[in-house]
Every structure is written in C-alpha cells, then in structure tokens.
Length: 47
Image 1 (tube, rainbow, N blue to C red):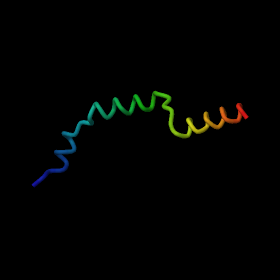
Image 2: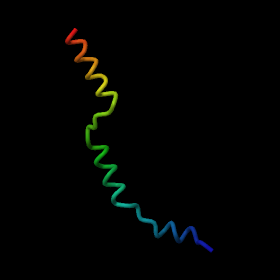
Image 3: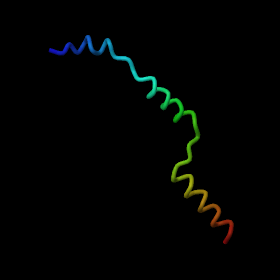
C-alpha cells in the first residue's frame, strides 16, 4: 500500500518547471492582443 505522507516528504519540484516559470514571468512576451493593437495603431496612422 502507498504511504502518501512518505511520498509527499520525498517530493521535490522539477527545476525545469521553476526555470520556465521564472523565464516566462521575467520576460515581456508579445501576445496576440499586443500584435492586434500594433496593427490597429499602424492602420490608423496610414489612413
């Protein structure tokens, strides 16, 4: 039978997941909303 308390004590979070989280949170990533806003701004400027 599985001893859940023992398994929880052995748990260590993956370093890869923590590294990805830090990269995502510390970078200013462009998303679709940013691209659409830029396109609208450019279109308004050329009309």
